[in-house]
Amino acid sequence: MNMIQNRKSQCIAQIFMVFASSMVVSKSLDADSYSNKNDADPALIFECDFDSSDWWKEWSLRQSPKRVQTVDSDEALRFDPKTGNALKIRVDAGGHYGLSLEFPFKERTGEEPEKVYFRYYIRLADDWNPERGGKFPGIAGTYGRAGWGGRPVDGTDGWSARGLFGGQKDGITPVGFYVYHAKMNGKYGDNWFWSLNDFEGLENNRWYCIEQFVQMNTPGKDNGVLKAWVDDELVFEKSDVRMRETASLKIENVWINLYYGGSWTSKDDQHLYIDDVAISKERIGK
Image (cartoon, rainbow, N blue to C red; front, side, top):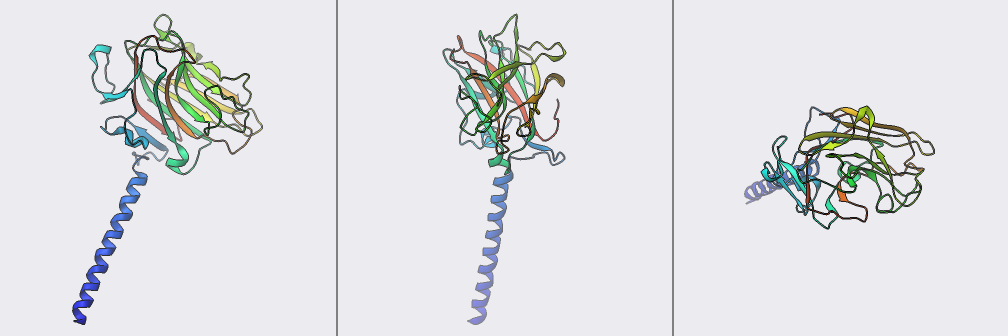
């Protein structure tokens, strides 16, 4: 009986060890599955190509957001895919909202950076024709306190550098940074349009590679940096930005935002496509 009991005890111990080991592996995979898919590039923090049917899980969401779908064809809007699926985003007639999607650094990586590169590809659909402007994807640190929606910042509560678009003219949509910063005047952020190297804006029905860079300023100094590239050409650079007065404000998230307005709304249904999002510690490029 003692020998049998010993064998039973050994078997139970072995089963418990295997079970415990599998639990550790499962937990590790859940925690790390979002990050650095390319082990050959240690600078890469996150990437998403929207090819997966449940791509939204890569953004820690429980379900897909409204007004979006992944597509690989869309003849009615003269869509030509970049590679595989793209994320199609709709702004409804009479509405503001297209998408608000965030990558929160503290939650996903354990720390908030002082500088970061953010790249995405964008294609304005055939029906894209904004009469007035709104918000595009960018980088932010609002901390739910200030830096958006008419909540001005004072250097201690928040900041943001989302993208922006202006009203389309002659088939061109101007784009830039919409910035809430510590030296802002008034209630709303400043519009800093991109115009270096004769850049005028985006045309409909073609893919563009947009990359943005933010480096936080030293508290008390005007040395924060904002840069932007379109198709690898530098279209904006400003190195005297004052985002903060305290080191507690850092880069909280990358914000995939599409919002029509201001207070004004879209006259018609309008669409655009986004693909191949990447966040990195170094320049990414096309």
